[in-house]
Length: 53
Ligand SMILES: [Zn+2]
Image 1 (cartoon, helix red, strand yellow):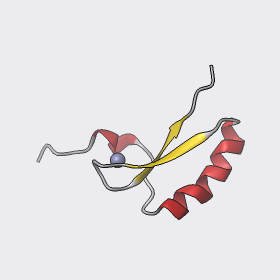
Image 2 (cartoon, helix red, strand yellow):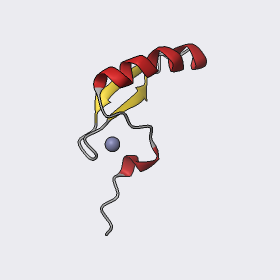
Image 3 (cartoon, protein in one colour):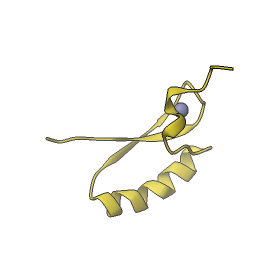
Image 4 (cartoon, helix red, strand yellow):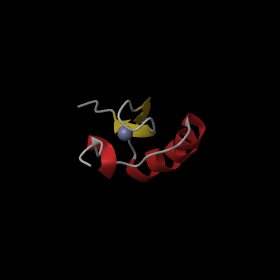
């Protein structure tokens, strides 16, 4: 069994709605913008940071 997705250490959400709700909190906490995307490895939703530097 070596098909562990590369994203196994990322936060995963089962729905886009759940991810959107959580994003409100993390954006405040980190003072950053986060993008939500559907992961093709685990079929879950993750955050990715947006860098404006
Ligand atoms: Zn994933």
